[in-house]
Amino acid sequence: MSKAVEFFFDFGSPTSYLAWTQLPRIAAEAGAEIAWRPMLLGGVFKATGNQSPISVPAKGRYMLQDLARFATRYGVPMAFNPHFPINTLTLMRGATGYLDTPHFATYVQAIFEALWVQQKNLGNLEVVTEVLQQAGLDAGQFERLVSDEAVKERLKQTTEEAIRRGVFGAPTFFVGNELHFGQDRLDFVAEALAR
Image 1 (cartoon, rainbow, N blue to C red):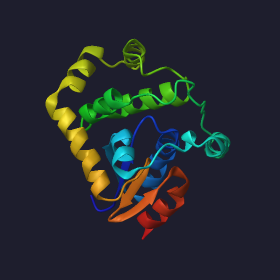
Image 2: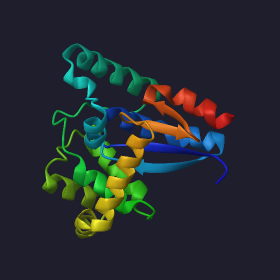
Image 3: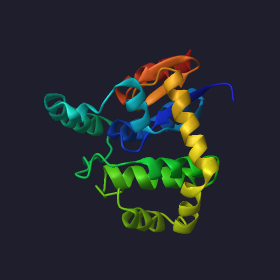
């Protein structure tokens, strides 16, 4: 792998969803691979003192408008989830567990779309099970993965690595040691990959 972009993300971040809709094309055009780095955004926020923009009322109102603008620009569906924020610990353990398996892309698509297109309450395990089954994934396997101590530890380590490397929110991209934060910085990611 000569060129790669690391993508640190959390499903609970609507801007991570928008980035996910664009990053595969950007990487393909640059002949680069994506290194998927699921992390726990709540852990990053706690360690860095950061918080969701939605927690500041004026910024939150602006952010909702901005998300809609970017979805229109990208030509992708998006509907802000009324259940936001949800605890994504189990969902991110799922992403970590499916990493390096043939089911990873299916899982990521199912979860992102359930949250940010279909507005499902993925804080409810029954709803998660329904989403997984509709995507053709085995809910029993998911339950085993998210309970696996090695999976839990890998997610914890990825989150700690993100913090050590200067990550303070999601999505965050690295091209080499160069950090880019936010889906609205994808043009910088593309430029870095082109160098």
